[in-house]
Amino acid sequence: MKIIGITGGVGSGKSEVLNILEEQFGAVCVRLDEVSKALMKKGGPCYAPVLDLFGSGVVLPDGEFDRGAIAAKIFSDDSLRLAMNQIMHPAVKQAVLADIAARRAKETEEMAAPRGTHTEILYVLESALLLEEKYNEICTEVWYVYADEAVRRLRLAETRGYSEEKITSIMKSQQSDECFRAHADRILENSGDLADTARQIREALKSISEAAEVS
Image (cartoon, rainbow, N blue to C red; front, side, top):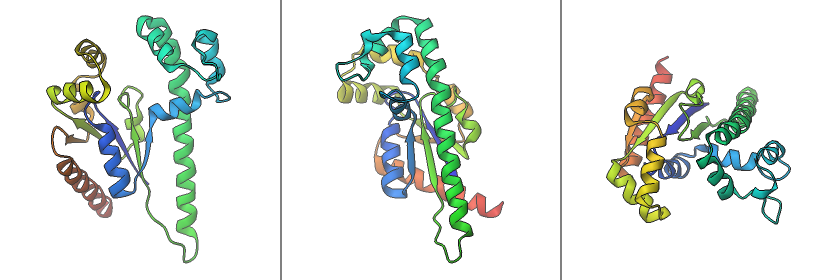
């Protein structure tokens, strides 16, 4: 199993990269934000501790959390944000590691089976906080998805309706371009044509496969 970590700033186009990996290369793509959402669902392992932290004021009529209300509280209170991170980040990592272990076990079983067919798994983890949470330690490679700031701002304004003030605030809260570059194994330039992004991905995967064959 090859594990690729995908990271980058808001608006860099990480979702488009994941779509290419899924649709053109058959990758198993795990978005850590989606894992977090699942763990916070009613009956999930993080539901009770999050409820204890925020109280019933962030619960919708159907019993699920109002994530917008939680985000607003976290944005204005660093202590709440830290407490939330202490609940969610370890739980998300535990869930991801368990999924990887299960897939590896299945892969090993298929390889050992007589006349069995086996397809190597390309497992992709995506998060803007990939480096902060040290997922790079379990990745074959970390890819930094880069786009020019002007392109990112335009994307966020057009696709999400964000104001310039909100975009600036989010960008300031994330890692710098220099930090991403310093810790990435590869950089995907994603300011323009997605066909070119797909070409870069294809070349990167070919390079990883060739390096594995040599080793």
